[in-house]
Image (cartoon, rainbow, N blue to C red; front, top):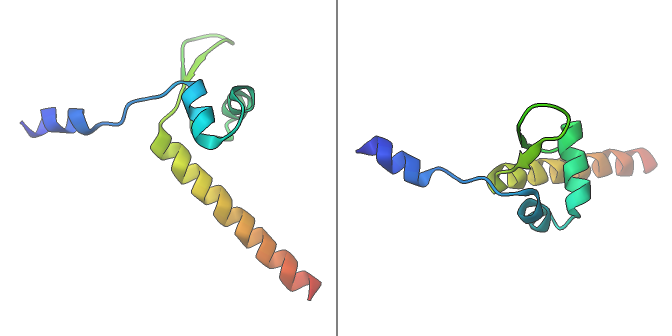
Length: 82
């Protein structure tokens, strides 16, 4: 019974269009980031042309980590200027 409940709770994947809207960026930019490994993404298929799927929770965590990196970088620059 617990196993079936876990399956219901599992987050589904979204396509690049939905993921790009979530991140407020273009689909083209998101796919370029995915190909370069800059964002959490799940390629489907073999060969050079893949279908990319994303989990919004992973993208949300990635976005938060990027914001922390940016804040940290700004803090270093402000200390160097002072």
